[in-house]
Image (cartoon, rainbow, N blue to C red; front, side, top):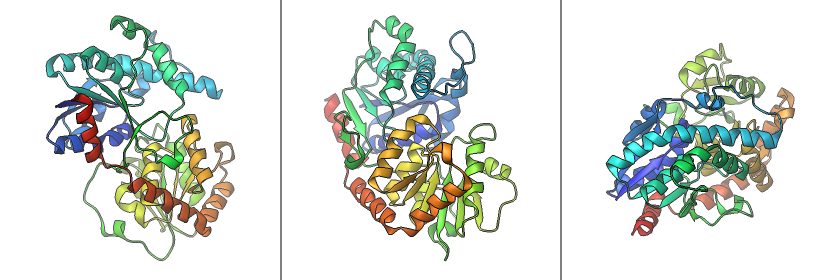
Length: 375
C-alpha cells in the first residue's frame, strides 16, 4: 500500500515519524513523507522519499494572514492559542502542495504528526484513513482547538465543518506516564532517531567523572534558542563532570572557548545517551523520550509552556527533576544536577521507565496494525 506521512515544520517532528516510516518501507510498502522544503535533507537522509509541500519555515507563521507579526503572549492559555494558530497557518500553507501530491500519487493511508494539522484534512480529501502519530508525550488540547479555528477557510473549502477525527492514534508515551484522560491508542515503542555521521570512539564509553549531556534540541541556531543552550551550558559547567553539549557544529562554535571538561558539537543521543549519568535539557520531546529509552535520569527546565505537562509527570514518576524556568539560576540548576547524580532513586526510576518502554510493540509490529486498518 501507499502511505503518506505528513510531518510538522521542524526536524524534531520528522525524527519522531522516521522509525514507523522506515518500518513501513522495510515491510514493502510505498512511503512518501511530506514536509517543508527546509526539512527535505533530514527526510531524505533517513532513506525516506520526501515531497516538499511549502517553501516557508515555521518562523513565517508568527505572522497572521494579514502579514502582521503576532507577539508571543505571557498568559499561558493565550500562549496555547497563539501556538495553535501558528500551527494552523503552517497547515494551511501545506494544503495546496498536499493536494497536488495526493492527486498524482493517490495514497491508501495518511499518517500525520499530532501538530501537522494538514494531515487529517488531506486524508479526508483523499477519502482514506487517517492515523495520528505522537511526536512527544502530549500537547495541550487547546492547541488543537486554536488550530481548527485558524483552519476555518480550508475546512470550508474542503466541505468540512470540523476537523476530521483520527481512525487510529499511535502513541509512544509509556502507559505509566500517560495522562488519566489520554485517548485510546495503539502504543508503540519509541525508537530514537537522529541524523547520522561517522562516530568517534569516545561516544561509546565514559571516563572517571560523571558524564552529563546538555541539549536545547536540534532546532537551535544563533538566532533561535541560543540563549537557552548557552545559559544551560554556563549553569552546568561549574560541576565536576564530563560535560557534553549537543548542538549543531556551527552553534557549538558560537559558544566560544569552553573548559577542558566540555565537548560541544554534533552528539548522537541515540548512541551516547546510555553512557551518560544525567541529561539536562529544555524538555524537548525527542530529547526527553530518547533519554527515557536509554534509562538516563534528567533535569528538565520546560521553557516552552506546552512541555510542562509531561515534564511534571516524569518528575512525579521520579525519573527526572523539574526546575521552574522562573527559578533557573546557576545555583538552582547545579543543585538539581547534584541531587539527581547523587540520589540513586532517580536512576532506578529512569531504568524502570526504560524497561516499560522496551516492552511496547516495535514499529514493525505497528505496521501490521496499519495494514489491518486499510484492509
